[in-house]
Length: 463
Image 1 (cartoon, helix red, strand yellow):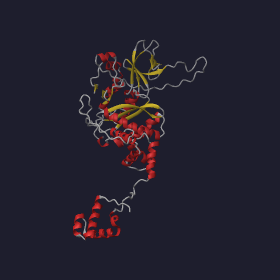
Image 2 (tube, rainbow, N blue to C red):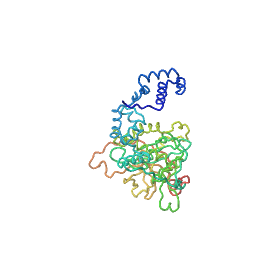
Image 3 (cartoon, rainbow, N blue to C red):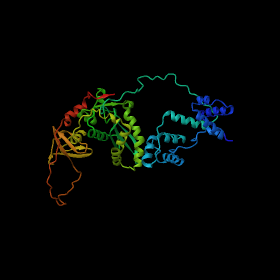
Image 4 (cartoon, rainbow, N blue to C red):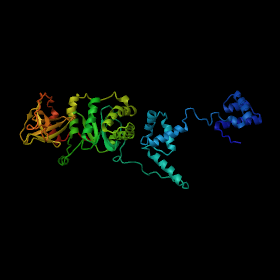
């Protein structure tokens, strides 16, 4: 005879009904004890007399729910994670199953399936890793007993060594945190993802791939912010030379020296703060981990192998999806972004300024190439040897120079002539079109730029 196990509720009913039948007890008292009617007591008596103890087993016992996943689907989920989605966290894995595999499963179900197979997320909690390690240890050493580890006597941490939590900023655009993370995102070569995220809402306001963590990458992120949102109030970054550079002399004098990015921020009125403590810009540091866990597998599944394709996917697909899932979009209404300048001014503001000196051939050297100054009609403009100028490399790559508060175009001098007047037939001269030269502005004054390099920025501060 098979053993019948009942729950506490039905076991109590069985004992009362059995006692009632065996000793011909009071039905009203039994109904009061079980909290049911006398009519139900009569039904239970008939069921007991017909089936015995088995009559009290619930009809749905050992019956699988209708929405329960089959064994084949469970095995398929585990196999997919081990082979195709091994670098995804479980939350992202569930979303990708719904998007690409047409498998609809909850986070809890996927987590329990993988946990049964001792599979953890790429970045599990410490206690989860410890629990799995203990489980494996007890399997290998079944005879050993569990030993409790005593807790530390003093858990208090000195305030100077701690990084306590602090509230977010109040307004959207009040503080933009910037950083770059390096990884083999696509292909076989490492690339740097330049990221900018708003502290108040967690919205990614700019993202750009480049092969190195350079000024060019952060300039493109800055351009995205200006065109999409406007001028923010403050940037918070790390102490890299892209944002802050100090020569030996200025270090001795304890002066902060603005770099190209800092000068662009100064021009647009954006405060620039730098820090060496990663916890001080924890928003972007944590976002980097989330992006690394989600973006890399998505780029792999999309078959992206070039940096241009990666930047397009980043802008068109990933950033909107990230902001929808992780940001506080409801707070976007409270913002402090200022109105951004037009595209032309953005192009010339996010420029690289470099001091140069004209040689005896009225030329300057820039990036291992020789250039000469021309006016808007392409006519050569010569300067005396030793004349100082400021070379302006705009964001779109256009080269200009300023001399005595006048702006000129720069024309590259080729190493070899394109046409030989003695051998080749002289081509027909094309009419020279007048080229537009932007007007002289304050950020392009050489004295202004040099002055900012020599003295500390009174708004530049370390956090």
